[in-house]
Length: 392
Image (cartoon, rainbow, N blue to C red; front, side):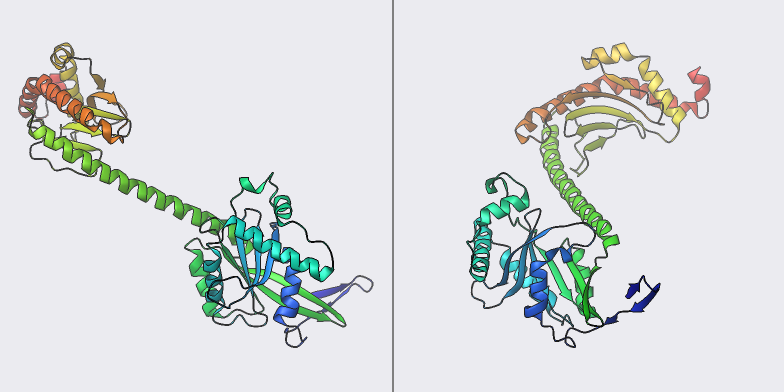
């Protein structure tokens, strides 16, 4: 750091010092500075902090004291630990302990803690104490505290302040950030230029440039965990549904699924007698469906099967008892014939009716398509490469 001399158009170095050299103490000086100027811990984003207590010792069954306790604009508690020239090895452990102690504080307890702080300040300044609720409403920019929940679960933040950090501290902080624990490290360096003294406060973990990236990564991880949990829940639902459905099929005249096991997918296949043209029953969030999937490797064979079935559409639908949905799917190599019903698939109370519907309509679909598919299968076996001729 350099001091600019505009008169002589020169710069002169400002000497970095240790707090001990300047006879500055942790509680008497650094803590006081940050208490009265918490914006020093706002790095570029203009974050505001409200100090609500210092030397906080309101922890049950322990005599430990937290240096500074603050609130951010979201109503989250911020635990601030100061360590002067050296962070020491245990500063992260200390901060985590304090965060765990504070995690259970209710909104009213936070208000009471702040009120005690304001009362003490009033005594020191020989003035009337301010109301904590009024100050909090003003800081949080809300109409009343009833509309705010202070110190929500897993929102506690850690701020560590020291002139030098040991590697075991920085590596632990970086590791904690991977689990969504908001932990910042601030490097404080005193400087001297003649009789003038300066203090530089610099956020080193995470760097201001990487903060948005880290927040984004944490949010992405939360999203992925949520998606994983949702998928596991769906798998459990599908397994339970298919177990009930297959039991029902086993007691029906439709034998397609007698040797099929329940799975985690939203569909179950069963052979139709034509290779790679299975019957499917579908269990989705918004519908149940029966269908014939025409998905052979050769797109020409798929189109051939679909066309031959389309030629018998009227008789097939008459046998089925309702109009079917005929999907040539020109953008894909496969084709499909289906019939669906809208449902609330995740409402277990509807499952018996949904399963009855699947059994009934798959039975009817198999009957309607059995003879046409048998004829098509014979044509495929005897056609070889002559599909184009037969198609014409």
